[in-house]
Length: 149
Image (tube, helix red, strand yellow):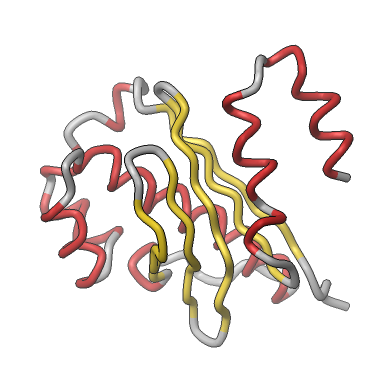
């Protein structure tokens, strides 16, 4: 039996050496982003952050899709289409479309980290407290997570 709701999350460390310069690697960008996403990336003030916000959203949504289907689909990043309804320098909200699924997602940047949380069977606002954990001191995460469960 597959669940009616699911949560997925992903964190990208922008200081990880392997994230550096990927926004200017056309082969990598074409593999990860769809045409509309590449257009957003081309207009971005900070293309590196924009690329990794897309990545984190897709990774989080993939985890939700895997749970909803009962097995992971083949993960082709460009097949997961991120549509941001709100763009900001450090916060993005929207959804990820994958086949018949439309998965709400929110991403928050805090320092060198981007955290995306995707949910199904719930409003996007239910994902926000999890994403905002990055702004909380690490020693309070346990108590804040307990309040989400």
